[in-house]
Image 1 (cartoon, rainbow, N blue to C red):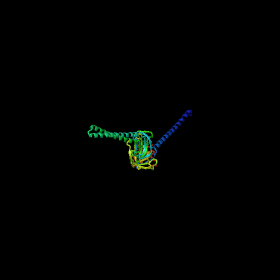
Image 2 (cartoon, rainbow, N blue to C red; image 1 turned 90 degrees about the vertical axis):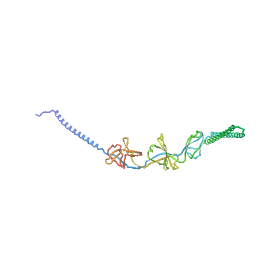
Image 3 (cartoon, helix red, strand yellow; image 1 turned 90 degrees about the horizontal axis):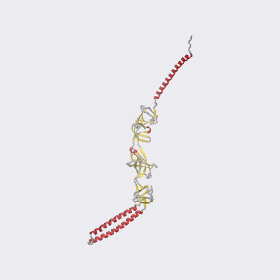
Image 4 (cartoon, rainbow, N blue to C red; image 1 turned 135 degrees about the vertical axis):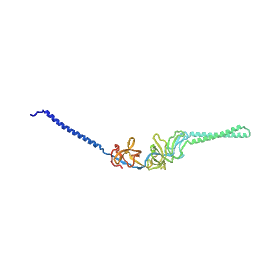
Amino acid sequence: MTKYSPPHAYVRRHCKHILRHRSAAVAVMLLATALSSCNDRSTNATKPAALVRTLTVQLRDRQASVTLTGEVQARFSADLSFRVTGRVLERLVDVGAHVNAGDVLARFDPTEQQADLDAATAAVAAAESQLRVAQANFDRQKALLANRFTTQVAFDQAQEALRSAESSLEAAKAQLGTAKDALGYAELRAGAAGVITKRSLEVGQVVQAAQPVFTLAQDGERDAVFDVYESIFFGDFNSDQISLALVSDPSVAATGYVREVSPAIDPKSSTVRVKVAIQNPPAAMTLGNAVAGTAKAKPAAEITVPWTALMSSGSRPAVWIVDPATKTAALKTIEIGSYEAGAVVVKAGLEPGERVVVDGGKLLSSGERVTDEGGAP
């Protein structure tokens, strides 16, 4: 007789069988997932070469230049002033006027100087009268002494009075000459031909002696004056050949040479004033014109790279170079000679023929493989 099994026992055996098969399936799935993860890591380990653009550097003959803007000024300029104090009665010229030597520029009210001249004239007349009296007294004492009708003391006194009267007359004449000159100083005259560039007086103004009232730029030699930054002097520029041209009309050109360099730096602008003598200035290059001056350095063979190639290694400038055999990048420090618009002059650190990364080097790492996308010489 068959043994009877309860329904719940059959179900329990059947469920155990199903669970064994399900566990095996889960294990297979987990193993497949692990193997897939290993394949992904191995794929990621093979990083593609970085795409960059390189440049093969070479020595090239270059001639650096610098251009600055200055102003045309007179070689000789002087401040003009009255020699005496007075009130301005008349002004005959203004800024920009061209004057000749001896031209009257302004006049004082000569009332005071005329009074001094009259007083000096009267003093001369009085001194002449005193001299005549002293001369007559001396002649009389001299005749009396010859006949022994007077004493030697009286004669000596008469002689001394005569000498004193002569000295007084000479002093009065000198004072008269000074008064005449002072009257002439009531007119301010140009000492040389030139152009009035500054004025600081008006009619009715009281001006003190030696107070500058006009500035006269003399005709003749001209300078181009520039305010130059001190760093420019570090370059090896030719100071004997400066090209000059008007800013408003570059066809008006001339050449010059550095005539004077200020020994002091302007504390406000931190610049040095440089004066360039203009050789045979054209007529159109007049006072006050803005002029562009260009100085060129001596030709030299140099290596230049675009500024996009410049990186840093710590605190020092560097560039990425590519090994042509392994196609890998390496960071190399350099020494910069100068910075220019769009380029950097390399003083040391690079050799002709080396390949420098000029684009795409920001995310490179040392030893990374690179691929040149082309387009660089």
